[in-house]
Length: 512
Image (cartoon, rainbow, N blue to C red; front, side):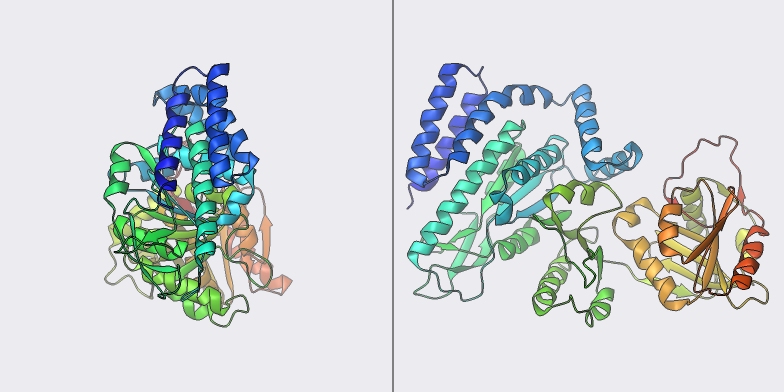
């Protein structure tokens, strides 16, 4: 079995070398012979052959586009924006944020599940997205393989079949990555990356006991995308199959990436209404999830594994479970389409401004609305403050005020930084409001891009073009009219800028 790995390495190297010259008919013929030989020895299907031929026919034009020039970056970004369907400002923000990270640190550790390899279109999309990350300096690592139960009995024949499938998958992914103009490096079993122990003496299933990151770091320095199969090697040289997610967990602890992703064809967790569970804020959401019907024993075990992993990663790191077609949206927009996990900072509930860093809170509001806040704002609200909800690092805040004799509180300010939006803090802050306040009303300028979100969160609204007044928990029409009059009568607490084209840097709400 040990001859498979060097042969596969030679094959991929041969493909890469052939693709770097002008692809002639003779070159394609030679490549076909190489691929056919591999298919015979590895029982590959015919799809591998077509991938290889297409690889040679497309590599040169793609390689020209990956030279790193400003023009190439612009083309890459435009294609990316079309695929993601977001606006340039939002995308450029996240690209800047991610590229500003340590250039010697892996950006994303991506576990691609086996079902992706059964759909060539999904696999091509995955390769396209991974190559985009690599070309733009956000270094990815891919892990391929299946899940495996603890103490699972595995025969030698079963190991051979699983390993053959893994080699074929690594080969297909490497071809597609190279066809998109980036270099891939499959780290086959026997390369010393995955150290394992046998679960049972009579079984060829194993448990990851350690990882050797030197070959992976070498890929970083040589600008290759490492592709790692879920196969380990024991101290005596025995090859064993290992669980792909547990391997991803161990690699994440060693590499400390910014993002850990589990990519499949179906997406994240789904609740009882068939809606994707967008955010799981740890540990605060664990108690809220415990009584949900969708929160099965298997999901609970998975969430516990993710929480334990996040505790070992930097505070800005996150874990995402999503589908291939939503993978880039999950990374570069605020409307992620999978299930996002993060250990979040606590939301403080305060009833006075005592002990608050007022300049820091003012800065959040000013950036949020893109306007200067009235100098006496905080003095004015001291006596009317109902509740101030504030994240520990001042990246999100909601200012709720008491209004005269009304029993219903007024949301005066709601602000979440762009970075915190991407981490799900806005949703968490809103859920806290809904849990604490059974009735609430607020107003927002008619031009506020956040209004579409407010319409989803409210139960009623009224607009005169300039302002839209929202509310929830209010059933009486007469009371709604009172709330509208109250909201419209409020004075603006922001100073209109001379240059009205100035765009806010974060998402702001409520009155201005």
